[in-house]
View 1 (cartoon, rainbow, N blue to C red):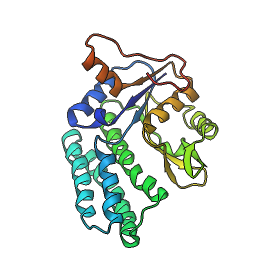
View 2: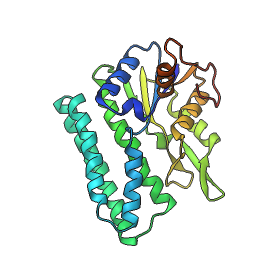
View 3: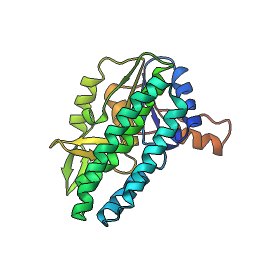
Length: 248
């Protein structure tokens, strides 16, 4: 079993997403794929938080920009039925996001919890897009909500990875794998039940703990591999056998 991590660059355009699909179609054995938000989305979500906390209504146009970017990709990648399903899912996320930002706008204040909640939408919208994109070519695809398997606990006022709880949940939820199982990086759930994130590099942490908990034979960071190949043509990506907490 392999764990493959796809960062924002890997899902940043229709061409890149088709390349991801091709990679997964051609893999042998069972795969767990960890996806980040579309390239640039987390920055836009951070901008939303800033604008709303400053009582600047421009945040509404940024929400529309995020929505249109996802719909633009869906329009290129999905058939009409899959597109309609994704549109319904995306509209739910956008409605929830609007509600949260309206509250921040009224208060003129943003908290750590509201920040984590808003930032999590990037990964949720990305995963909802990748599922139908992959199912068209790989029927045996299952989707796992990372918030059900990755947990954090408070430490010195910040949320930190709760390795023991996460490992237990991963082994339970991923005990029976599909040909390809997909999930999100970065996002998690606090032990107290509210949304949390793993911070910068969070998708790396997600992929690493999944690989460790499942005893994966390989963990590969596809974004990093692509950068390495651009820098040094002909050199293979470094892979990790029996990984614990390292990334290639």
